Amino acid sequence: MGLVSGAAFAEFGHEVIIMDIDREKIEKLERGIVPIHEPGLERLLNKNTDRISYTTNMEEAVREAWVHFICVWTPPDLDGSADLSAVRAVARELGKQFAKLKVKTPIVVTKSTVPVGTGKMIQRMVRQSFKDECKIVSNPEFLRESQAVADMMRPDRIVIGSNDEEAAQTVADIYQGVKAPVVMTDLATAEMIKYAANAFLATKISFINEVANICELTGADVDKVAEGIGTDPRIGKAFLKAGMGYGGSCFPKDVRALHQFSNAEGYAFKLLKSVIEVNEQQRQMIVDKVNKHLKILNGKNILVLGLAFKAHTDDVRESGSIDIIGRLQSQGANISAYDPLALLNAKKVLNDLVIMVRDAHEGALGADAIIIATEWPEFKELEWAKIKTIMRKPLIIDGRNLLDPVAMRERGFVYEGVGR
Ligand code: UDX
Image (tube, rainbow, N blue to C red; front, side):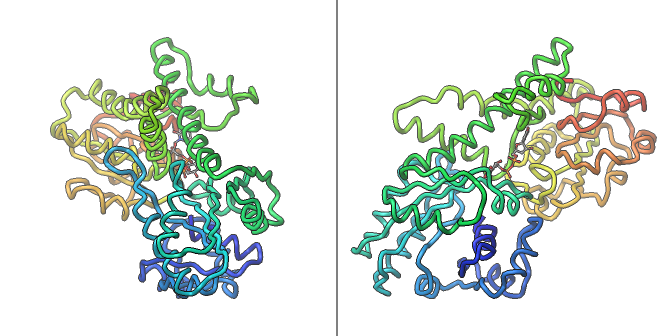
């Protein structure tokens, strides 16, 4: 998020300093190596090299800059709340540097997803060392992984929240030329918008997943139901793809955090509790489908296609696939797995018992079941007729409704999707 934002700000014509405490990352960037997989990012960084500099030194960054964007991760704590230690550390250090360098009215902007009230907390942290005026702005990001550059360059909206109009306008000016509605709010509202947006999208997914489950019981087809309701502009087509639930670095943590900080404020957000439960249930449901067909999993060979939390990314954070592999292994299943991009990252979080294969055909040899866990389009193009001949049992559990059920059954597979 920080890197994409920095590249975009440079493209908008600004001088940008990108700072990270991870020396290895900064050194790679200085050598022109982009440490994450994000389409279009490398091109954008290369195009703007004369406006971007990199550093691990906060003093250097603060000396040169006026507006400071905090783009650190806010991972979930054990109770689901957002862990703000990185945000606090940055705010404290900014305060120290502002004081040391006697900076004049700096602006600190949070892009990280942070609970309502964090802006004020940042103000307090900065104040510990810096007693002069420092303005705080919230400018949440809505970037999707694998589409982050496009989302940044052509956003649906720009949200800017501050209790200081001038500071808000300064941040709005950074986006000058970007064609998007700008929503100006106070600080707390902007912080809430980010959570409400992600929680609403996650709610849409859990809703359609529950519809899928009732479709299975009644013989209706969830994909058609989604099409039928999605054409109503009040509902909208997006985020109505039923499957094994949402994953990734944002939805699971943000839904839990909103639920948790609502509780902390004395409000039980009942709907979100269900959204979380349904998401958990969808993953178990895939395992239940395998159990239904194979009965005992001990010693059975299962190929999992897809390890990333969604297609077109190498990110496995909160990936449903990784979760399901653990559940299958706990019943004694032998797992082999394939992903076009995420094998390396998955290796870091999976145990050695999972056999990583170089292609789907290799993993299908002798398999009792194949689970489609990520909606990679290339899985549609596999040589399914050949795969059928090398599997021990021709069972496909399609956790993403990627394949055509009729065609798969015609090829002789026992095929189960979600809600179809
Ligand atoms: C999300 C938000 O879309 C983005 O605005 C925010 O800034 C960060 O979080 P991202 O995590 O990259 O982006 O993934 P997204 O494309 O939203 O998908 C999230 C998860 O939901 C994935 O696991 C995906 O497979 C799942 N999903 C998405 C569904 O199961 N059904 C859908 O219809 C859409």
